[in-house]
Image (cartoon, rainbow, N blue to C red; front, side):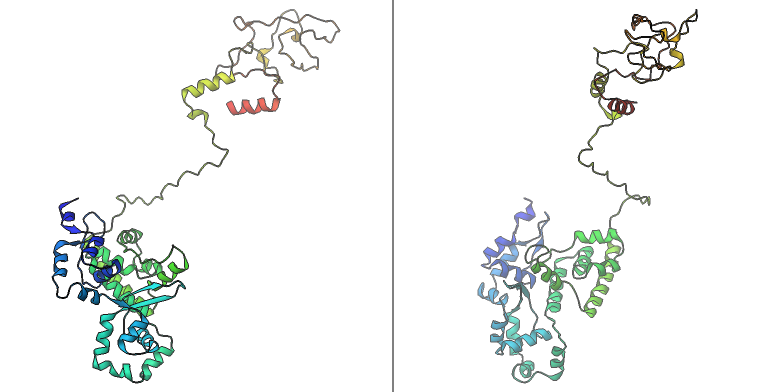
Length: 399
């Protein structure tokens, strides 16, 4: 804890020392009855010890302070002014009395609260005697017939004044004004997305009732958003002026290099079942294991032996002197001769004579006339038990 925090109190503790409920304390802060200072740690506002001593030294503390922050509803307010509840509601709709806070009851109806001190002052003013005792003027009655209701607008004006008093930074003050406008209106006044994002950092905490996107939250958002055309025009002008002042103080942060190239997109997530590793990205141990699986040490194909079904290449045909038949050369097991005769161990030649199978040459001493394949071509093993389609697919995959 810093020295500044040690000399200040949290708002909850300050409310206990002043003998106020938390709602009464918050209202006293909003009305300026209790002054607060920003928290250096970023935790909101705190109350200094000197402010606590000042409030406690006032005459009639704490009863006087409680009376100054007392809020009443329509019925109690009408009783304080000596009028009916219907007449009091008309006064509130006309803007003659201004609500200080609101809440939603269990039926999600908006309940407006008014300062008892202001209602007593309104009733004690002799200029308001005709409104309290006589007939409501025709001009005001005509406005009521058109559906005029200034309670939400007057509350927004009072709420805006409180937030502006709490913030001195120009960007924070611009964010306060923008919080009462629709996002479309804000985008028209502040077209730069970096400036809008910077203002969002200072956006004040909204009054919430209920869970997000619930009916109660939607009602609260509607109350806190300007709807009257003249109110919107006034807020737009105030936001434009505040934005110019904020730009003069300091510019909104933005990327250091404006290259104009779009941001690289994120990698597409791999669908289930496609988590495969490319061969060229395997680790050396994986490569060795894959090589051992492809070429087991116990199974080796003799040099010069072709894969099953592979056609004889010209370089593999041994040309022997004496006019011997080319079929006397070495053939792999199951290879088909172009003439249709099958040559294998114990096979019958076309002339009807049975010849013994020629012993294959070992890999260590191949026949001089046999030309081996290039070293970069990796031979495949003969696995008669595996289907030909699977072997062909494996060869195409490993090449």
